[in-house]
Image (cartoon, rainbow, N blue to C red; front, side, top):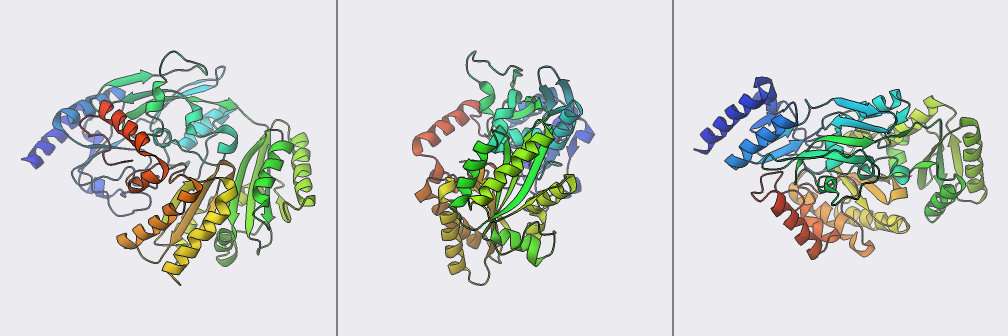
Length: 465
């Protein structure tokens, strides 16, 4: 029967990856279903290959058996992109965590997909280089997952998303075919750019096993400020003003609504306030360059000009690493917010910066009307790249009520031609709303690609559409 066939398949997989390469039973249940769902994983088994050849052999077996496989990285995603059912196999890249090589001259790093983001950052720094993608889950998130979701983070405004940092990829298709396109060149227009099939496609077209990452020269200066704004119309004006006056060195522009600041700084006394409370918006600004003294002078002058022009009404400059880390700790306190807003719902959308405040106001009005006294939420995001985040609760984890929340969040995007997902992907959670962002022709082409590369629909099925 089916259970016997699955047990036999797992035995065959053990023959490939060894007994330490397969987890079952309580070892599976000891792992959470996802970051937002701490209940035990329901997967039949977690397969942990040690290299690309083992991934390919496992996929070949699963393809022949018609077995669904869900690839998983650091399990820090927010859209149920790696949530497994009780008959599914999770394929974890956690044992494939090596930095294979670092080319200091060519500014590239070749890594296995399971290496944590923070390790990549540290190894680059050791070579006086930098890897610019950065976000709060850096210690757990794996490079393969970051690539497969086209992760963004805090420096997108300057360096772009994960897509811009990937030169080459090795991936395994659903039938076990290995596609090795480990390009190390910045410019290569010889035919199709095959790596794009696997960047941002959430493991539905192939499992990323290795990658060539683009590094950048290490920056010598870092200047940070926390400012207050009293009129949202000044937020995009401030962004453009700093982009011009800082000569391309603006690296982060993180906007926090008053509800965010009040929740993590004022009400719970979790952080020392860098500026006074009571303002409707706050912006965490950072610029990085090549010479600290000169860049600090330019940075301070740019913010003084903004203050004089009325674009900001209060400002605090970080005098050193300790103050800078304290400012970023406010922005990165997502775990604290999730605890405060339990049961929490997390949203990641994008829309034109000029419309963002209007959108937030409309969403909160509707949520307050529907759940008076129970709704509570905070708004924040990398508004320099159009990305807005909501963390909220309506006091219930009921599925139907949470679906009502999603209806409101995504319906209100339509007048602004926004996206249901700025940087976390679609997964299972957002697939019903794909039509808000993508038209029928686009979705049909996506389905054609899926059919071509995974005709049996075994690789991360049900994600995206």
